[in-house]
Length: 108
Image 1: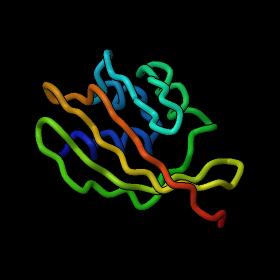
Image 2: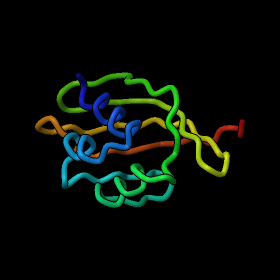
Image 3: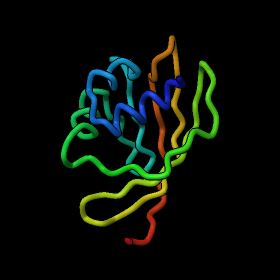
């Protein structure tokens, strides 16, 4: 199974152990919208919480042992939605960095 699919499954199941198996302890997420760099522990607390956005229509566009590209939609508790394109940097079978670009979508 792909590293990105394992990540998606861990997030869908809110499984912190599975999440930490595929995301390096040195991981950082670069949010292009703000320029913030968010470390793994901070991100995992949010993604594996009741405030986590709901991911829909996730698809892996490309993945090899060094890089992955995926697209999905996220819905937030306030009803806002975004289309997200993400690039994952992979090293030694773990995700070490991701960068996202998001486009606001109409509320459902």
